[in-house]
Image 1 (cartoon, rainbow, N blue to C red):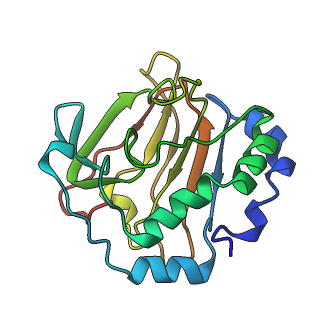
Image 2: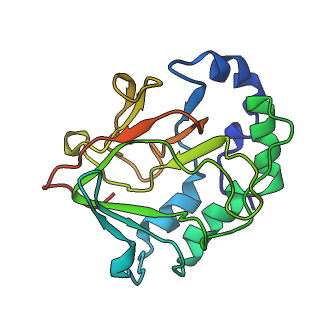
Length: 208
């Protein structure tokens, strides 16, 4: 059974909107997962053994943990599998017009599929990896899914889309408070050669 809401499996109709967005092509999808799946995901315990080497504490990436080479919970793996399924990739081909688009096959080993930001966390302006670590094919598309089900907007942590120099914020997507478990599970899809950042997370927040 697909875990993504059925209305998001027809992204072709949003192609013109996606390509017209500034500062670069992107789209913001609400209520991304089906209700039953996200209820189960939200109430399950995300119990991950976190190794210290995967925790970033620099001035550019602070209090951010990545899951590289870590065994992820079943439902988290399910999300990654769905986003790499041929059905979803075909949907993204229709959205972006990239006919040769393929998913990565390296899993959670050479790339980190799951991140956590702690209270006080920071992720400065950056561009993600430029190529697939196994095939060398260009990395052309990012998907960001927020999984915290009780976030308060005043805690920060939104996503800023920046100009080509990484200096000016052109668009901001805040992380909204989710009043129901399935009410607002946002996803952002955007091209991978542009710069973006995560807004600082305030100390009183829960993890993200």
